[in-house]
Image 1 (cartoon, rainbow, N blue to C red):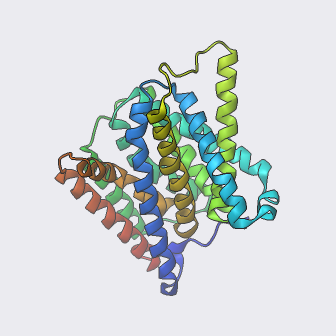
Image 2 (image 1 turned 180 degrees about the horizontal axis):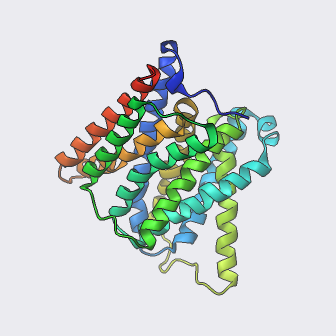
Length: 308
């Protein structure tokens, strides 16, 4: 079953779809960025696999009742659960684990790596799976977003290591899973697609954590879980994943995974804005990088639409 028509090739009459897709991608990245500071705090006492399993369990518990309420029990029961759990288990279970593992092993460099590889991964996936033909405008826009992402983060070191490899693997799994989520479940709403696949991630990470526990690995947090930490976990799950993923899937459905992934490059800028709002200093370099990314996103879509 083919993916929804690529909005880069649709006529001008459907520009509202492209605008809404970009707005959803922006909102998704803002919500996703909120999870990084929370993860830094939680990883001080939580093992990565346990934190991911708990996060996905909370997300599934939030989204599943909402899916039933919004789309009805028939839509939930009639979904392709086998396929959804498989895709979600691999892409959003192990993919999320690799991301959190990378964050626990590295620093802000990880964000730069993800921002630099996600658009490339998404383009490769669309070329392999859909035979995408790259236009000049798309290529220029792609390189602009890569440069903008590096500028926004100050470049960073691309040194090899387990953290860098984990982040890169997470990026490819995330883009692959996003592509299949939209392609393979066309009859589901964004919340249905998100819930179905994130439930698969919950099962896979729950199984991994349980297996590690039975193997003798200590998967428990190293400190007492108090009310402030519970609140932080809820925020980390809702804003950083549940809300972000629903908007992301909706955006991919409108833009395609390649163009939607351009917005990931600007996530470090959103983190900087959040820090500034909390009393930190303004980073002109990050703001410049964000502007370059915005140019790349617009140019890629305009160039492809005109067939340049």
